[in-house]
Image 1: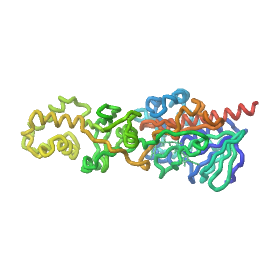
Image 2: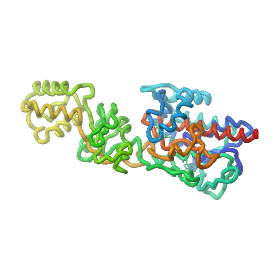
Image 3: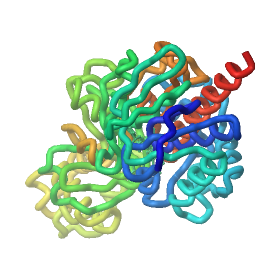
Length: 429
Ligand SMILES: Cc1cc2nc3c(=O)[nH]c(=O)nc-3n(C[C@H](O)[C@H](O)[C@H](O)COP(=O)(O)OP(=O)(O)OC[C@H]3O[C@@H](n4cnc5c(N)ncnc54)[C@H](O)[C@@H]3O)c2cc1C
């Protein structure tokens, strides 16, 4: 495709935020404007296709700043400007219909992430937007009335307004991990980056025998013994640690601890995950349960006693964690103090946190460009006028449940509309 040498708006990054920004800008400018979307990969939206296990959990009906971390409080005005209903309306205007599933999670009605990408692309094309793929932008220079972009193949493109939506470092095998490289050239900084929504690692000896087992429960992240956050759901035991959505929700603290020995910016000597295998039962109820089982099967080794209430290997392992070699004794020897030890372990089974799996396994980047470096809600840079920022490259990351794409859409909508409005205003001058 021939590249227009001059455009009104250039968007760098054809991910969720960039595609949304591009469509919004092209629609607002209509026939009078030229909008180009530059993507380094051969195709736009590759990561989108992988979201929600190919189904794309594109927003959450409860999306608001309290489900986010980093500088989310500073971004409050963006969340207020665009509600989940606004996002869904926007997608409907592109021809994409959605449905709500459990916990407010929203998916395309046809269950296909590709439909979200199709909608964004068709909408952009309808307003004559130009997609330029296989064109990583390597350099950006601010000029008097715009920006000069250098592309990898030696070409260049000049734009009156620039939107950067380069994404983060998560899953580099799906999308480039150049992060804030261009924003940095224009004077922006970035906070420390951690992998988010990723498996948490613990000493392998504690979990290896449980590899592949799933069980419902509650997980608590403890920083020096104090609960930072707790979540309930399906816990997945892996060869190296703990996984599952509920564990993902705690993982940004594990990443921060592993990289900086802090949690939420506070020094932390010891990080742990406490697993409650019986969240629906009180401690006395668990004691009663164990007593009943030991009376039912007094000759059974204690290790086997929980066979009917927990996945077999989890039941065995929690008994060993609580009783060590005594777990092999018969249940008739389960005295009151031992029973309490077992109940205590089953309600709060401690796994020391060693870190997380790498960026390759992470779904999101925690950290990024401080939101204090952009005007909110326009998303225009405070350091380089006429340049706008959107998406994961900013220091806003959400919990699992459609929150990260929601942020990509709303920050993209804000940036795309602001850039187009600025062009329109200049044209009236
Ligand atoms: C496996 C997986 C599943 C996920 N599932 C969900 C989910 O169901 N719901 C949810 O809310 N979130 C989910 N997420 C998170 C969500 O996908 C991201 O937060 C979101 O896609 C971020 O959008 P973005 O546009 O900011 O960045 P990206 O989607 O990463 O897009 C950035 C784009 O910029 C391009 N780029 C970078 N630098 C340059 C350059 N110099 N020149 C040209 N192009 C460049 C990249 O190639 C990339 O295409 C998931 C993430 C992963 C990895």
